[in-house]
Image (cartoon, rainbow, N blue to C red):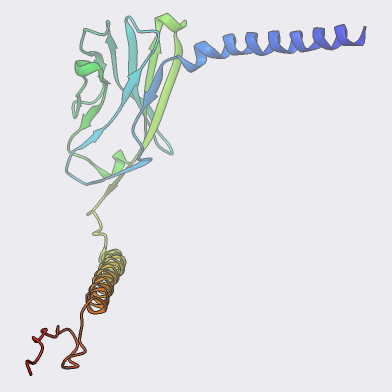
Length: 228
């Protein structure tokens, strides 16, 4: 009786796990929005900067809506609003609230790009920029990703002297170890060849008759018997 009860519990657990997997599967295949690996982008005042954003969906998409928003300590506004009809159509802008912004989007090579280019940067442009997307095939669930823009006077030069010194030291150590290994192999080879030569000489010497003149490595000539 207890065995049947245990089997029933195990079956219920397997069923529960399967149902949970089915519930989580759409989430794992849902729309994903990315602004790259960099959490912060630095740009010089008066220049331009590309704010990256791409999206992907295993379900596919149709009439996908996307928009960019700006958020600072005291301001929130929509910068740009657009749509992507399908995988073969490039993104289109429906609304733009800043003439300095240009959509750099494209769906070529299956890279769904909805990045924007912001020109003539000002210090007041510093803040959070969020890329949003909604896919009708996912009941218009919203997905988003945020990147922080910091507008500065000038970009600081990174001093790589210490890094170069460390790389040079590591490279020199590795080179030295390789050289030592090569020398060790060469010495081992020479010793092995020398020992083989000595063995050959010993074998050759043991087969020679040196009783005539006592010189090593020489062979005595036989003399005819003296006639009386």
